[in-house]
Image (cartoon, rainbow, N blue to C red; front, top):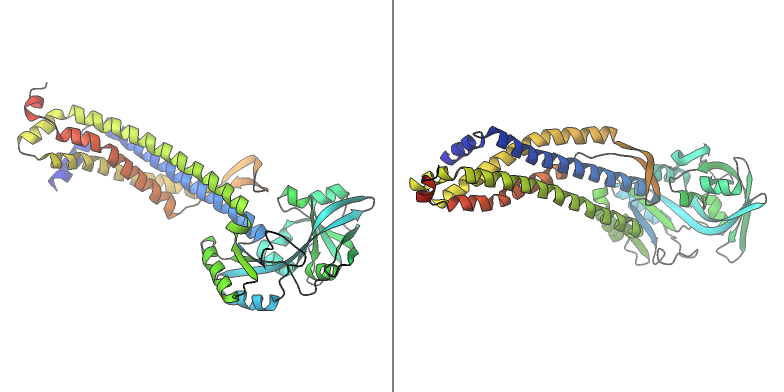
Length: 405
């Protein structure tokens, strides 16, 4: 208790120095809180857009389909999978898909495309498909021989709503698959590359075209929280118990995107280290100056019988109290800043592209991690850099320092 009283007294003896040191700790803490909160919010927003609005959080395929896609690697027991997914409470929705390649033409213009057969109702529930249609309208629940093309593909073909479009491909029975459809919508997914080759059909129409009645290539699953993806993936895999099927999370089927994000996150930790280093240097400089100025005081303490370890505790206690006060005040400022950025975000004039998706606004996130990591790093770094000054104070020679003016 006596040490605590002395520590509080010593902190406020040199108010200017204390304020400057506290400000350096607080500013470093607040910057780290904002940086981590904004980084987490930005990454989670990108993941949500990339997976929740496009690929799904989990995908089910025939074994080796992702490595070597083939028209013949189909999922045949769709009804059983639907029953299993329906029983898992963390699963919000799922949608079946069918893929193939083909050649389309409108008038005299033609282009190679990826045929994508979707269930319009389930696709809308899983990836908000209907909101991506910028012209015309989405598919009706029942097949109507309509087609939706990507924005880029429509520009290549100079195609418009109600134009007729011819598709040629290969059917699963070995025959030539060809048919005539009416363009009912033009879609913008946010991925310019994908929009130049995307040719969407109602799942029933696509199955009829490719002679794949009742069969699909992919099931995309959406879960309620990103943190549940790993557990739900294992649960689906266990319940299916089918060696011919692969159940994989987005980190696997979007591996290049995941690796790019992991590389970017390394930059976040480097920035955090820089912030901590700046705080540590400031604290070391201030505490060392304080120890040098108070050598007579430490000499007097040793002269009256104070043990060296008590002096070490005193110096460390002063720094700890100042760090805690700075963290408490910084918490208020950091939470306020992150709350504002989580609501209003940071807008970019022209936006930027990540993983093929275009983003023009990034939002922060208020979470425990953004407060806990800066608090621990500031507290530990300030304590560690104070060890040298504290040991220096403990080694003060009473006889020598008492004669100092």
